[in-house]
Image 1 (cartoon, rainbow, N blue to C red):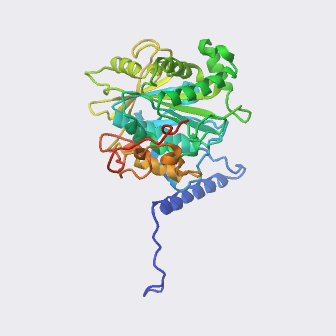
Image 2 (spheres, one colour):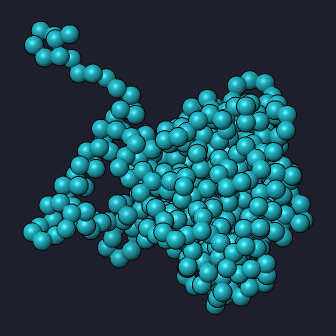
Length: 409
């Protein structure tokens, strides 16, 4: 009702309404700049004004999902920035906050290593970017988190938020309810599906022994309107679990790009520092995640409290400091919390999200369901990922997996 001034009181809205207003205003401004670029300038051809526009930081990604914003799922097949992720920022010459990015199509696979709280935060940031900017028809996400050194409840607590995303639903004949593998059997099934795809790909059944040049050529041809299928990003959290799986995952990391398969390999290590030089940290990461050595780009969290990231495009499996590893790029990574709550909110706000991956109906333990404890995380200069701090908790009492195992068949 109107107040004494004759004006209706302002309506209050939540963060979602605010995000919709903000992203809508940004979209209008972008469209105005595109159509008002000057006489003779065709509509929709406004140039990107900076790295923030081309490679949004995690805060912008979160707003895109909450809005939803005009950039939601903008990177269709053939987009020049498809599968490019922003890991942080650096300073170059007189420029501050220059985005540091890695293109998975060029690198093949990405390896990330460091203390687990910050490592998980960085991985969530990468996945949030990929799933907010790529539609499920263009990108599917597979999780392999079967490391026997880590309890099942902890692994599901770390990754259960992925179950909200439409990108993890099988849409190409996979024999599972969600593309989330938490045990060696599920991991082996997902690996078999991916290797069959490579067997039928441009390199044929001998893809594992194909020269690197052939893999790069096939990867360059993949994509575009005539792509035979979507891109697939496989998150490998630590040790896949068995010797056979280790070998298969390593081969996928090295040659999977030929069929649009790109791995993000996570390895828990101490941060690179004076006590643990880059070369030693890299070797520790390769020991923790056997596929790490096959990754074409790596990022090592460094510093006494892992507040910086050393990013490098690798060539082959040589250690840092050799001729095959040029200069590293250093970028800051800020973090306060390891809670997955911001990433869960981003996932739940994605169009088509549903709780199938977060409840017992999908075979996910209670620890992986939505509703874990609150928290605010900042990773790679924005909120979505982690740093030292508390984990989002799931309610009291132990979590029990539903029959059949979480997320798999």
